[in-house]
Image (cartoon, rainbow, N blue to C red):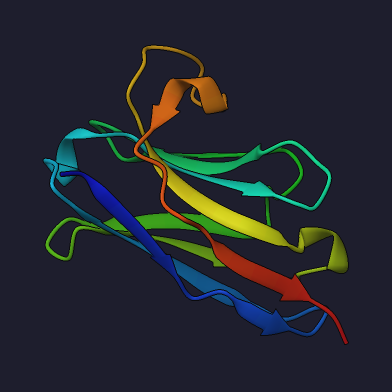
Length: 124
């Protein structure tokens, strides 16, 4: 059974940083493109970043490019999302998922095995 568990969310002040983690089990972790998405209240889920199989190339959304980095640790079966210079507009639930369909890397329809998400709140 595939399971993705996101951790690391919380309350952070504007301008602060946060590292999110996504631990995977039940799948050959190093054989999948892993993606991070977020969903703010009343908005659609949107792409944040992905690390692409097989070359581990990083992909970033335009809205967060320059303020986010993605990395994975195959030994720990974990993908990390480091976020910097956070603003209140970054407040959302952040989800990780595996790419299961051959489609755009930044499309939710290309992904499955969604985790339950971790809440990030940026506020003073």
